[in-house]
Amino acid sequence: MLLNVNGEPTPTDATTLADFLVQHGFEGAVVATAVNGAFVAKTARDSTKLATGDQLEILAPMQGG
Image 1: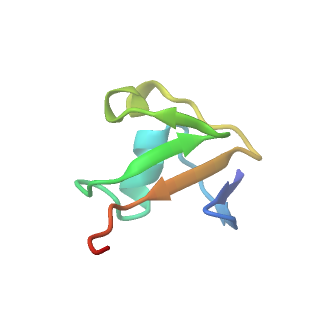
Image 2 (image 1 turned 60 degrees about the horizontal axis):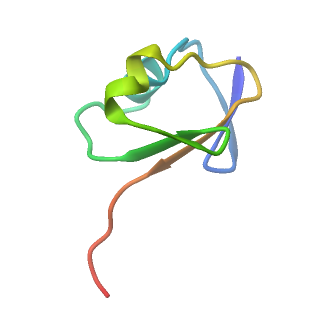
């Protein structure tokens, strides 16, 4: 399936947000996630199903000011 991840078309066979994060190297990383504009808590990633065309945002915290 094809997802839009941080504005980039991204093919994947992941069926959940947690699977997607593992497959794309975010396992164990501290990130904030949203699917179709809705925040997804870390505890909900295993149960968050993905579908073709979903919009994912994956954001890492930054230091500085």
